[in-house]
Length: 274
Image 1 (cartoon, rainbow, N blue to C red):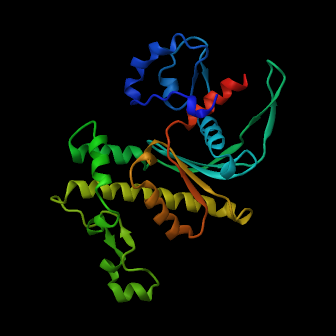
Image 2: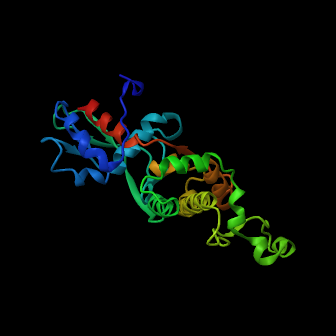
Image 3: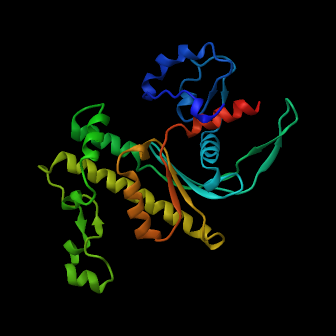
């Protein structure tokens, strides 16, 4: 069986309760992620609960063996409601499977940072601005129709503070953002503000990732950064990350693994190894 044969179901967490009856006939159920504990009393007896980051790491390694295979280290930025930044070490840690005594591998990682300013902030502010508790279709429409830099009219730029010539004296480009959303007014275009919030959160996330990776580059200058998670499936994400990395760590290797299934694939791998 290949990953192409796997059926995928996507729905908001609040709708998961309605999906649980479909699990009753499953041979084995694995649960991961923050929500797995929330539904523990409703899931079938015998459900195995797996570490969220371990399953995400496994899923990403399995889908990107040439870039971040099991013998490679990387920095993982897992961005959802909040974001965790972890150093995934290279090599394989061997343990024993008590059932068949076969050697299996487990990824080794350590959390090096994170932030609470991520998808939750973007979602919450978007709901207020768009006046709906289900803003995602409208968000997609806005972001798909908004070019990067269009919202610069709502960001405070370096040249807004110092002027173009003075900015050059400091060695800063005049159109570099000095303060995201610094020029927003009460009657500003809502769509542009939503796009500006995305730029603010995503660029800040790229900045944090570069800062957390800096110390690791002393030993491995080529260590890549892998961005993943539900928040980063939004339109324009890749371009915003590129801008952020170019500003804060130009030349760094990075990739965007934009799916919401890495943890599930990590769970599937656990099942196939049993």
